[in-house]
Image (cartoon, rainbow, N blue to C red; front, side, top):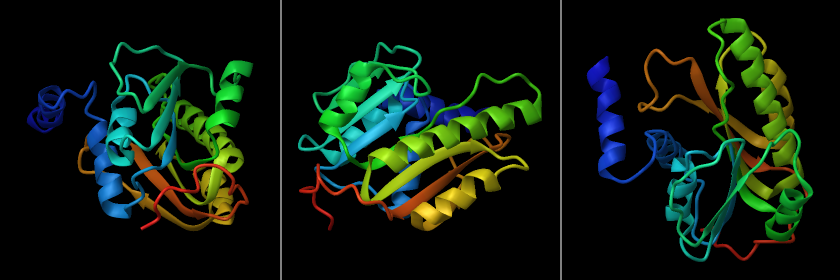
Length: 208
């Protein structure tokens, strides 16, 4: 088991990513083909920055990634990434202004996770709360036909997330990347084809 974990940890170090989580995003995109050049991406729970870096590679210099997290990060980001230290539950006027300036987005993604307590049901409940807040942000800031990626600690209340997602997206899929630790309870849900009406910004990105 330790060798399995070390493989992705060492791979991230070799490839200059701050965390192994980037390979989860790469697997998700390999499966669902969500990212395109020129897209705008909102990354919730972005620190230390691996998902933002991975998304920035996919969208290229003509695209943009806006990342935020309660924690700061020392990761050096390329020019197409903006990182802000921010509480998603209590967004500042400055961050709301950035959302209005840069949004709506083709992809909203959340790798947010709660501070674990060791109590399974507590951790699952807190994870669900983060997912529902990420979904609320996605509902407000996604472009029509956009995609939503969210990590959840699986528990008995998962339908509280899946039911609204199924109403908001044409398709909802679950996926556990190979790069997730086998003992982890995390799963990723992907919403494809947002049914909302945001169509004003960033719509020039290629959809091919």
